Structures are given as structure tokens and as C-alpha cells.
Image (cartoon, rainbow, N blue to C red; front, side, top):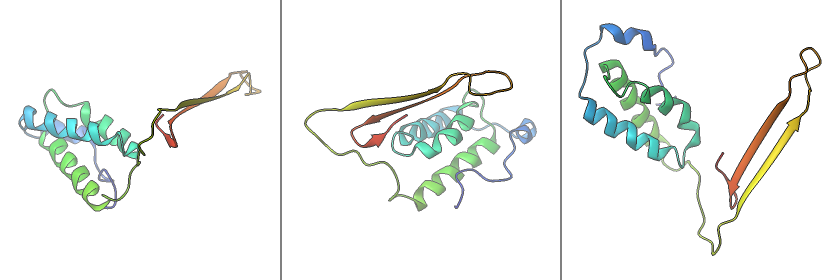
Length: 120
């Protein structure tokens, strides 16, 4: 699969779909939450699928299986954490005070990294 989530996937279509077992769906989404630690590009997809853990419809089950198939094709991709003696946590911030000329709003950005890998 080329995309993590099907391009024509719509959440509204699930109202008429039958439900699947909530336990197995939760386990699968939990696995995907663990995968997000090394594949931050999957955060949005996992966020979308985790909203329906109470009563998952068959549409969400199919979408979750699609994500798993996508991950199979890209097993060599991800963040690699090297083992070191000490853990070095670094944080960088950037603030634009009243940058927007029309409404004088400020914007900011933050990046945190452990060693050489950005985590947030």
C-alpha cells in the first residue's frame, strides 16, 4: 500500500456499517500507537482510528488493516535510536512576537530531541 490511509476513506460512511469486535480493534490500534514511537508520520492516521475504539465499525477495521499493510511495505523506514551512555535531551524554541501585521498574533514552534533523533 502506498498511502497509510485510503485516499477515499470517509468517516461518515460508517453509520450504516456493522460493528466488529471492540477488543481486537483496540489491540490493533494499541499496536499502532506503539509503532508511532518510531514512525511519527503515522500519528495522524492512528489519531483518526483511535477515535472509534468504543464501538468500531467494519469500515474502521478495514482502514486499520490497510495501515498494517502499508507498514509491511516500509519496514526499513523509521527512527533509529542509538545506545549511548547518557541520555541527552535537547529542546529548541522559536517565537515570533506579533509577527502577523494584520492581527498582531504571535506564533511559536518547539522541537525536542533525544540524542540525534527529533521526538516532538
